[in-house]
Image 1: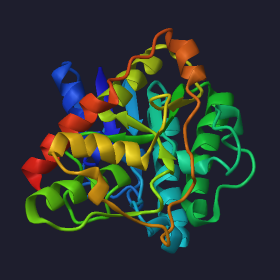
Image 2: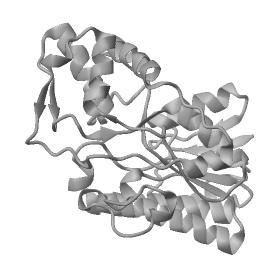
Image 3: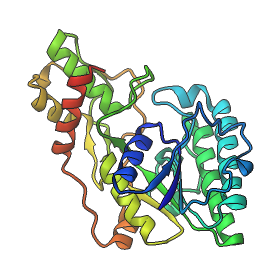
Length: 302
């Protein structure tokens, strides 16, 4: 296939580009410094190239407090990115299947995280701007599909993890922060202080499992939204315990700061729709994935 990847320099994007190249596909993956998706008129950018598939992974966001403090800017930047990409797809590459990423924070609080609820109600306030741009991306895909018959796949991942994460100083997602703190405490004696009581629950999916499931769904040629997670969640204490086993660190030394904000108590995506489409749904055991992550953290010293 001839494949175009927007957002190929991000965490998921780097794994995707390596995977596609290893499979023998022809890849165009412009970095943001080469192609500013907020400014460039993409309608004239392709220079006659025709793509079989387009991945839209590009988004302006960060972990931590970023969404709570940059919601307005996120709305402007991500709406510009999404509108430019969708216009380029519809006007210049209508033969291509477009694969785009959503976000689990677009789900309203207190509802079952099934695809039918994705556009219902309001996202929680601290993620409102970013979450609504992701909702509007889905609406754009749906309306272009209805009017022109364009093919798309919109995937909503749970927290994606694995090696080769960002090393540019930006805030870390919880599982990297957790692994880093425990590894550094084992090496340097730094205290491990985690936010909350440790009983909040989270779901992880390994980046390679996510990409495998995404590829298999794309082959189904179903234009729809799909949750892609591991199908189970664990407490922060359970994640910490597994990492402590790998590192050789006593979990009883971990301190919990219950005064800090920790978000939803539980967040696990329903993956039944993807299971029905795929028939089987293999993901690697959590212990195996965390072992790989810990080895990588030990090597790079986040």
